[in-house]
Structures are given as C-alpha cells and as structure tokens.
Image (cartoon, rainbow, N blue to C red; front, side):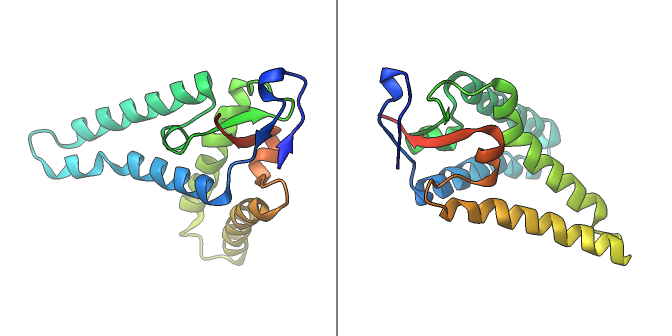
Length: 158
C-alpha cells in the first residue's frame, strides 16, 4: 500500500507489514514487563520496579510524541503518520497507544468478578471489541480500528 500525500517526504510510503506491527507490539510488551524481576530482590524491590517502569513509560511517551514511534516500532523501523502524511496529534497518539488499551484493561479487570449476566455480556463485548480492532489489520490498508479512529497509518521508515 502506498499513500499519496501532499508533502514530498511522505509522497510515497509503504504500509508496515502485519508481522512488523505484531513484532513491535511484542517488543513493547516485553520491555514493559522487564522491571518485574526486580520485585524478587528485597533491597530494590517494588521501588526499583516502579522507577524502572516509570522510566520505560517516559521513554515510550517521549518517542511517541517526538517521532511517532514506540521502542518496539523504533526497533522494527516503523512509524505512525497521519493520513495526510503529517505528524499525528499528540492527544490522538496517546489515546491510540495507551488510553484505549488501558480503558479496556481496567474495565475487564473491574468487571471480571461480576457474575451477573450483564457483567458477563459486558466482558464479552470488551473482548469482542479488542478482537475486531486486531482483525482490522487484515484489511487492504493494514489499518486497525484504532488507526481509523485516530486517522493514522503505520508505515515503514525510509
């Protein structure tokens, strides 16, 4: 897929592959879980893990708002751009990368103990939304639902 954009530097870009997007997400997940082993050291413990996680989160946010990349996307040479080839809005980038997954995770966690039929339906719907978002990657443009909401594309760098 190529995007035709008004800016010369983005006039011909190629969409990131599905595998590179998946690999970038896995790298980001592994990086986020990297501080967990610190919890097993009594001297460092929770404070060390919390500080390490805060540093990782700060690095992720900084790369995201300055380059349109996370650590995983940077490692796989892919980046996020707007449909017109410009730099995505910081607010939409943060919603796209953090707010939507965080909200789904919180709702799933809070509601997982709700045995009522309404609670179970709600849990199913949240899982279904996540599945539909992920399956959108198989569209011809390789854009997930969160890309469509934020009007972004994930493309190869260079």
